[in-house]
Length: 141
Image (cartoon, rainbow, N blue to C red; front, side, top):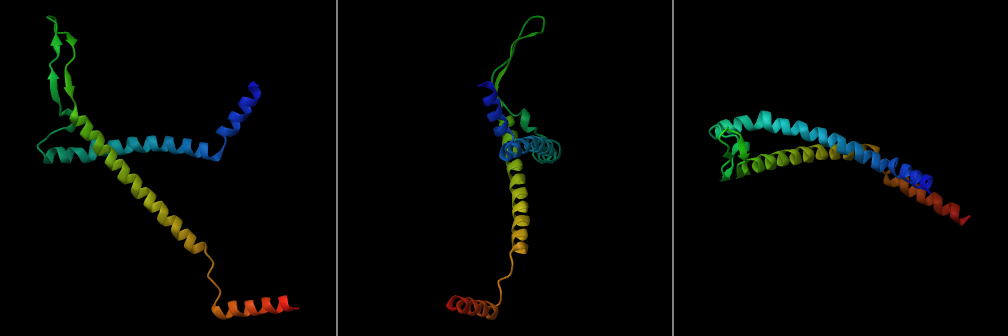
């Protein structure tokens, strides 16, 4: 029983779609890190400079201040709505989604060009007509 389940799992895991999906997830994770760095390190600093040096991730609405002991140790952490982090994450998503859109569009263009190159040209009308006449004569005999 255990051997049969292991065989089924092996067949499932070695299917092309599963392997392709795993590769896609790994590459997607790495691509996400690259785009996050692009946003955080290259795009956001000039935007922050344009809007007065504001760092989006520091934008928040405080709900409760942190409580400290007499020794200066934090007893209760501050509570805040970190909407700046949400804005930053949303901007990251938009840039990642746009980058993937451009990549898919480029791949589709190459795929379409290959199809057009591979498609054989239709024979001229006179050749097609002669072929039909030949086929009709063969069928009469």
